[in-house]
Length: 401
Ligand SMILES: *Cc1c(COP(=O)(O)O)cnc(C)c1O
Image (cartoon, rainbow, N blue to C red; front, side, top):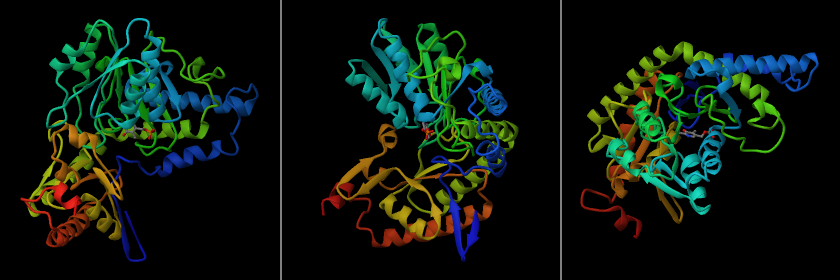
């Protein structure tokens, strides 16, 4: 991204979060100071805040093909996921206490499922195949008389696999089950039209699309009367109480407008860099492979397993060279928590620990990628030369030493 004190900084973790774009920041700034009024107040400063929120709602709605009245701002993608999944299950519990999700959801959804389980719900976590896809037949077979809600993520944050959302929505509709999708990663990276897809509920977040952190939204299809999850005032048409995060909403709106305008170009550029990166890495480094579907995949995602070494060690060495990436596991002190996503697609334990997620975004350059490939080649060969792991050694042996 930039060079400071001779040290190159390369950010390759756009799926974790993105920087706020300058245009987004400039749009937000006046709402901290001059136009700070409470949108619920009747005087002018309040009214200008109210109209700024209306503009942002139009911008966000437009990006997903929704009516503005179907968009409800929340504090995060996490809150939208909780509201959609737990909120719907609770709301519908007199009809049944069975809900369906997948094994590869983001923790916001996965842990919402665990919560429902503790509350006496029956939760089905669908398996996925080696590329990260659910089986549509298995989904349909898992639907019961008492199933009230299905939640399946649009695109996976670790391996980038994009599910066939329209087909899933069709199955849910056929059985009269409410369908929610976590589209936090898909937003700004995939063309989304809630009407074409036929989804009932869809979660999104600002900070994954070059907007600010701490702002998200839930799309609620018109006619679906999902009750409010929190108790309080009448904000967001009585659906989501709490004084609006004015600057966050304004920033999210602007980021959504830019994402819509740049969508085709963004996908093309990011995918080109990603494909180049994957081709070089898998071509020039031995014993490594890509995880997740190569066909139906987020444009910026490259999740790669480097055999016989620890991802955490790669991550730390890359960090010393100014490169930020993330790993599929945290092998820190006593706890070993392998990625639930890589586990679900059947990556062996020792390989999960050698997996790195590189995610490319709008500010990534070809020079950043070339630099990363060079450092990676050097790092992998250095680690392999000192590693006691080889094709005949398992992770367990190494960890128990
Ligand atoms: C980041 C993310 C979330 C959580 O969104 P926050 O706004 O950070 O709470 C949920 N789901 C997916 C797939 C994500 O990538």
